Image 1: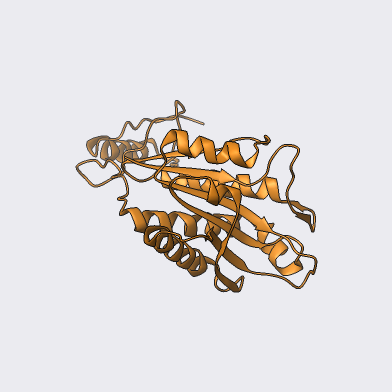
Image 2: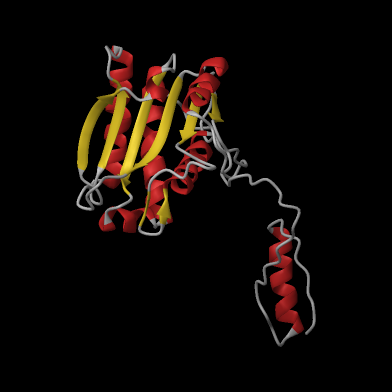
Length: 236
């Protein structure tokens, strides 16, 4: 079973970067929730989150959660900031001191998949290394992504779009799936090939036709019943 710990940067009293009406802690949680939901469509994977709500966690606590859980990979999601509003684009980080070949391969794969999703929206600032606590203190493959600059008008306009956040999440997921060789869960189907959908507890009625002549209505009902549908006539 592959275990992935997803870390939404900042939270609670730590809002992270702010700009253009956006808050980093809100965006990172949204992206991480999307990552978790998408990853759970695959077999043999368990997804943990350092936070599921707007709560504060110090950096060491985040790393400790992943270590205690024996995660196979740790991925921390952030939104960048800068002193200049001209800075923009996507970049990723691994720990600076002698990262393993496996960690470098993970960064290469995830970074590339994210850029496939957003190459027309944000420039690629490259794959980098840093002494970030969540990279330094985690005992497994660890990657930190900076998904655009909140202070940049162009990047911020993309980050306000839920479909763009969805593509960012998809890029993270595609990289993880490829690296660990995950397979998507099979969706159950009937003998006719139709997808089996779990019942919602609600009933939805479909009207197939309306006739002024009762005999024409009866003909259609008979045809539907022979095809296995529960058809009946109502008068309006």
